[in-house]
Image (cartoon, rainbow, N blue to C red; front, side, top):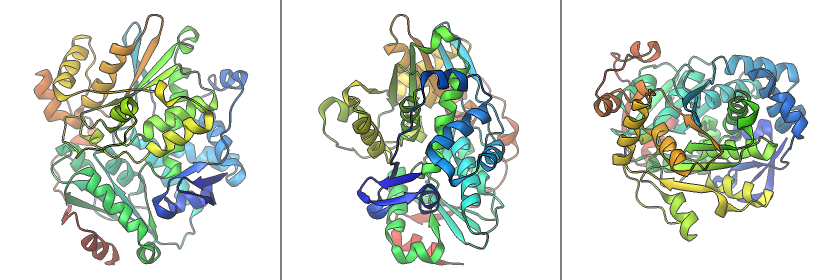
Length: 428
């Protein structure tokens, strides 16, 4: 597999290099040089396979012979050890529940696959520092995926006071090779610090820097697989009129869905659902990229005003000669989010803010004869305080959260200052 840097097309790397390197020169994202496509008969056959076997075929189409089929299957068996069920909400809408992994969020798929791939492609003596920023769920997925792994140090930045208490508990109580830093700033400030670190060549070499954000191609490719898993669970008559609504912050999840469509998965259209941080909806409306200052919302994992993966979306549309104007994207404010959560609850489905936004925009945009699927990206209990307040009912904590709820936070605190981060990273 060859990938090229979106900011410097002359920089081309293998899959292994992209996994280890994370970003290219000038903070450029890597993108596949070849965009494989399956025949419709292949797609039909794949949809009859089990999750891991199908995922092996999907990922082999991108990775090629860099990893043997047996090794890829073994690694996927270890990574994808939990289901992604489709749950009916109404006759024409269902939720793809992606929160049945160890940290109760969709990030478990990408985080665990990346850990498996990095372990596979790295020298056993090689020291690696995983540096990543999180707006909520990435931190936990990455921390748990790499926890206890030899020669891997994980440093996670998150905006202090801007993620839910239980999200914080899930990854800031581990210790060991997991170090967490509460940054005095928003997610974009955390993301900026990560980018500055990757721009520092001496620092990169000194600590063996890598990233586990969705900028890492291994995480992105893993997420393609659950879109196929969703369609495999639908009856045949639902598959050809499928509309998928994706809660969108950094836009990695949407990128993966679009790559699934590029492979031949029958998706009629996508809806990119955002909160008040509406850079993309405004861009699609007026063709001007004008990020505002990030604002804090109920759906904190989507509090991103400068989504990292958007260049990949634009590149895919350009390569496929799709029209970007046909992508539906809209925003939902907190008041509407609360109403959506209550409406879903009245339908017998308990949801958290991110999925509720995706459902609301799906419901408003679904046309006659279409079937809608929205992504449930996190377990409602991860937002226990806000969900209980909005719905007026108590949630039972699943074991993964209950066992960490009373543990002390082990986080460091830091200003949004690169020199302070650099000093921290260089400390052994």
